[in-house]
Length: 408
Image (cartoon, rainbow, N blue to C red; front, side, top):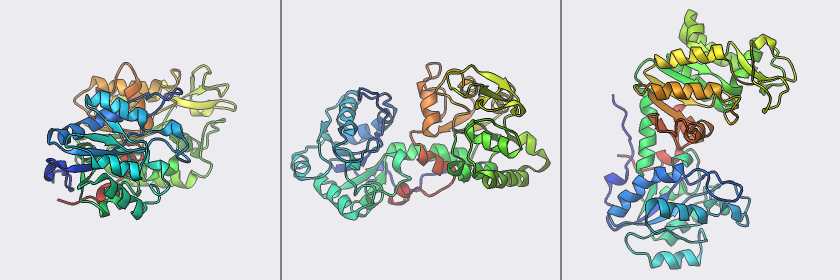
């Protein structure tokens, strides 16, 4: 049965001339001077905004930025985001320096069809993360909205006022980005072109445990790299020096290996790919020289920062023969040239094989492929805008911000 999006979208309702309250994910990285370092999430929201504008809708955008402790954290103001969005959209975006209040009510009262305003950072209000119903009612009332559109895929795994409580105040549908993200990820997990290879990196084994177990259930091959793999190397009895490891991870590793043994049987070593060699910094410093060795040769103060050449070549072969690749988490410390080799070679293999359906999720992984000049993120089937949301959807978990929308 083909994967479909089971919730209503902006295309399923009449938006002509309507006032729309739109939740976007504009949690973009900032430079030290406060300028926007990567506007990918803004660009990803443009199709929905244009669709609404073409139909004469008036749009009130709500979003968050960073983790402000209070409204006094002005470095997290959405003012520069509104300015950049106006440039990308080639359409005026009026910024209101409040989230709720008399000024919001006054300015939205005078909005005309085709106008766009952006409210101040939702997280300047503590009620946002508390999924507060009264705050959601304020947003709905003061925006004078007739419809809520959820287009912030990166926040749909959160039960916040602007993702869940708001759906009790207004008819709620998905934007085009949320639908696109859902379909791309669900098709890769539920209806992949075989063989399916799942690649799992990053560091936090507790966060990745549900995804690891899901990958083993559905994938023909599972590759584990990054600091995540250190836990498996240590479990095998190797001294991993001063490498990053979760000291309480043994039970989780044991469970993942048991799942893999059940799934792959006597072919376990062919289908669960762990590093056979690693790249370390002997000094333990990230700026140290890249030295490759077997796991048995790592001694303190050395730290493992990447997979080694032998493992890289194996991953390249497995990936090149795959029909679908899902990648969540870098295979090493990809922010440094010396230890980005595993992730870079994997990305290049995908880029050179456009017949492979490639879905990339997770903040660090997506940032890596978008920020690398050799790729610019354009060589992959889908690069997700979501971090935790993409991880949760890949793992088959419920996304409160989507399940609260009107069903078809």
